Image (cartoon, rainbow, N blue to C red; front, side):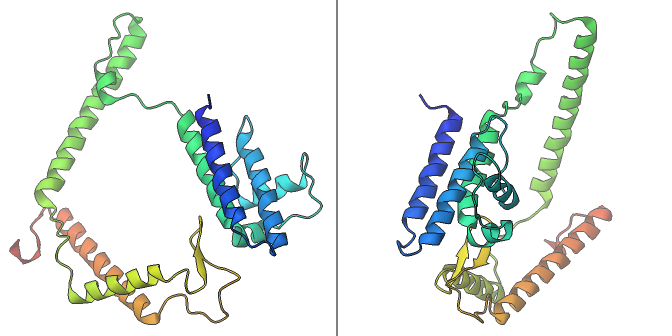
Length: 238
């Protein structure tokens, strides 16, 4: 039966291989580079002490034993042109780390834990931790109630300008790939298919987003000022 780590690695290999299989047969150099990067990433994650498959780490490992490739893409080239492969293996690395981490002790388990069988010093430490947890829980509950009672979040009241901006943003997100860009593990990147001089984002959309951010910043500043003055009354008497 597969261990959780083996299952995650098998998933990353499958995703990587499916990606490589979609590369046109005539793109022999790119296909070979992806296959070599796959082998190095798998090696880094399979190690007893894993190493995060970053572009510099993959490049350095590829030039050393057991690989010693005569030629291998530079770290910058891996980052810019082969980021899709790194994204699969960074996810695998993160998932394995999470799978191998001991789950945190639940609050109820700690508070209800019986330390009567321990020595007096240990009992004192456990009791102190339980009291701290109780106090933190009390403060957290009070903060949650404060937010519930006084912070109004209205998701239904978009202005006409905000709604127009959201529609423009939605259109931009849907047309990223058709404009020659790609979305990988790092973000939106330029690819070999991006025509020279292609506009990344229309100036009108950028200005609209800037206005939304400015409005948000102003709202946060007003709320902070109200909080410092001890008032939670909403603007307009709401």
